[in-house]
Length: 201
Length: 201
Image (cartoon, rainbow over all chains, first blue to last red):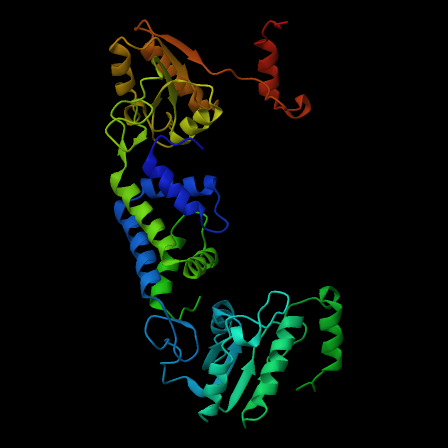
């Protein structure tokens, strides 16, 4: 693309470094900002700067936080005896969005993956064990994706937690609500029959 | 979406005001920035701020410019006797990208559209006539989209320019290069037969 302005070129280049944004989209965004009031751009620039400068990792659960302790860990109304182990902040947010969970979290920062060279030492496992050792935690819920790497991670963690008195559980797996049996994958459907539960009337 | 950080929430909200970017995409962009070095975010924020603050409208052609005069109008190597009239900066860029045109431009800032309430007075038509009256311009090329509004605009401009000695031309219309005749629309194909040109051997 041929810009007649260095300023536009720089803004387009900066936008285009973001994932999923090509130079055509970047130009569309820049032209949009130029049509809006100056304050819109200023707000975007400030929001991004202060976010990147201000964000920290929660000392307790490794969630992204504005303070030393994240809003979830700092919330006294949440159940501090319950910890849900997730891979990353996306999974945390997905669970938060359900509105069904009122305990705390622990972000591993990934899962054990020998192929990608990620071992237990690369994950926030020691800090989880430390949290459990403090004795306040009653139950650790594994909410890790049901992949081979995920299952390996859950197995590793459950072994490590065996020595402590904490209860280890895992989120339920089965056919989705609203999902058609016909389209469920064989593994999920098969497991859902094996792990059937009594029907509550 | 449930954020545990006000900073992230604000950044996501700011990104999500942009066209074509929803909150899920905005979050993906924010998390991407958090994984990158701080300088990446700083560069984006600065590029956007200085772009929005610094950009001006070219005094001559109404193109977006870093100075009072845009890079195209200020370029002495370009043919200053040739002016291509376009609707907006996107069309200008499309023509620049072809690398086939070495004259100047004039951005109308829109086209005459009674339905949208855009009349000749809302467009940069007077400044085009002023430029032509100065006598340096030899030819005005109409590069306006071939819609009803576009044709109306071209007709209006050609009438206005009739009094001056300037040559008025329009970009060629016809079947696209590489285009299949079968898939060309009827109007374009029909006109391309009526307006056929001698075959050059």
